[in-house]
Image (cartoon, rainbow, N blue to C red; front, top):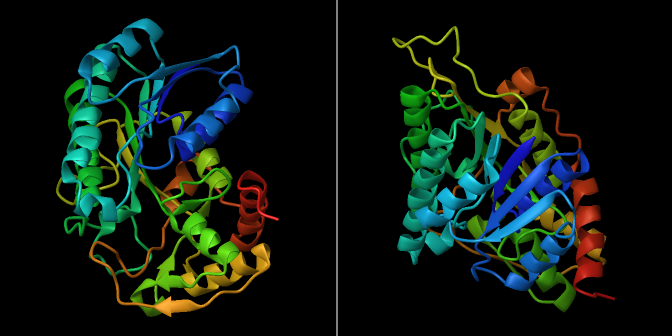
Length: 336
């Protein structure tokens, strides 16, 4: 298939693009290479597949409608995976306009282009952050998600609402995937695994918020990519059992779906740090601090709907995943 992947120099986008090329798809990558974190990491990810004959790369911004329109007109994608977004919960507290431009303006540009070019399926990144102040565990797509605790989360919930509108009005098949704490080789340096690894190898204390009581549904990158591909290959269809009197937030009478994609096995943050210390061969002091604004205490993905519909089955334990991450980290950052 001809597949457009936005955010193709990003963590999930680059791993997905590699897999799509390996199975024979033709891919147009779309990425603005912004400096939210070190752009050299994005260049290094891109170098893994940039020379592939079935790959074309476009450096452009989703918020620029003419750039998006031209990409669709020139490439004529059959399916689209939208992974480009302004990421980060804490950054959204101080840079709100960046999230509006990328996650809202950029997303409506994608929706409009998909509609006009009759794309067969749009898969887009949502986030576990949409569960916000919810405390029922595990988080299920049937739960209401009306109390976000960060602007980032609010934009991701908005994406789901915008996608449903296009599915309902124009019959565009859309599927949102609520990612749960993705980690692994080539990960983002603003996320906890690399932040923790940096401190461990330097022998510096680690700040652990919520006094170490956080738990997260850490999900290895390979399992995430497998789930994205399985979802991409199963375009959303109307739910024949959808009841407008008792609506299911995860489906619709329109060709619309929302799924959790996680490991379905939350891990205490202190245990995660301990495993990372083991694989990096060093222990450091942990400074226990109060919870930060915008954070949530726990995440846990109920992935039963994704298992049922596409056969999703995460297979990588946190211990195994961190061993692979640590090996990559030591090689990439030249740690002895």
